[in-house]
Image (cartoon, rainbow, N blue to C red; front, side, top):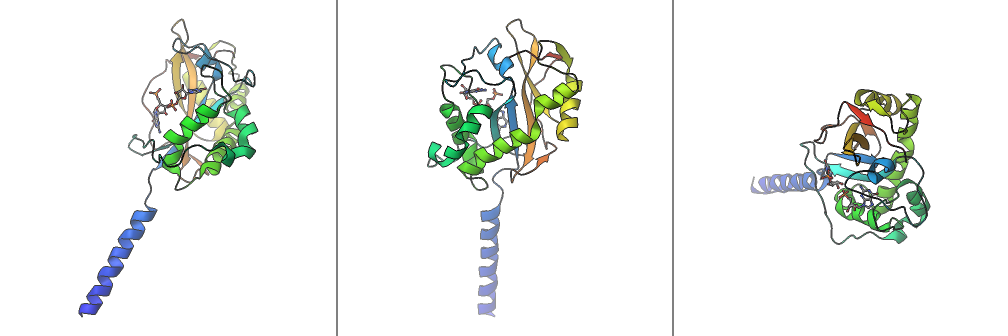
Length: 227
Ligand code: 5GP
Ligand code: 5GP
């Protein structure tokens, strides 16, 4: 009897350890893309073009952010895993095109990518190593084609004012999923389309409907500035 009990307890402890090891350290990702025109003309930021020149007039990646279903999120999860450009050397030219940094002073993007990896990427390292983290974000960027979806609905980056509902509908039609839109303000205080959030399952493979949206509010009519 004693030895049977011992075996049972050992099994229970083992099961607990297995559950601990495979338990999720986050629930889903926000995949966040920014409109460069709105980063550059806002009242908070002026911007600087990358050392490689003005980026294309298209959405660029801001980040792929692990998140919890309750709206909170982990950050800076592993100080022992710094950004290492040599692990992503085959992706750098695509990152320059699709994940440009517009912060000042001008840079080649490395400090932005490093910041995103250290703050967010290290919190999903159990699922995506550095190469897959950046590779996943790049392939989501190709998959979502935000500007194309908006243009197909007659929504163009021409400085005009568009209905927030129409913007969301156009992106939903293009991607299959409901986006969340973050606005900022241009220098005259108009609300404008700044960032688009889409949700991705915790493997990084599939877009999903967002379990929770961030906080914040746009006007019902927002500007889509030129770049
Ligand atoms: P802000 O305060 O400008 O909205 O966000 C500043 C930064 O905090 C973002 O760029 C991002 O790194 C992080 N952040 C803000 N909101 C969220 C969120 O809902 N989820 C995650 N994972 N990060 C966020
Ligand atoms: P967050 O914590 O908001 O994800 O990271 C934003 C940080 O990255 C800020 O420190 C910001 O200065 C820097 N950064 C560098 N380039 C860019 C850019 O093109 N867009 C944004 N939003 N932040 C950038």
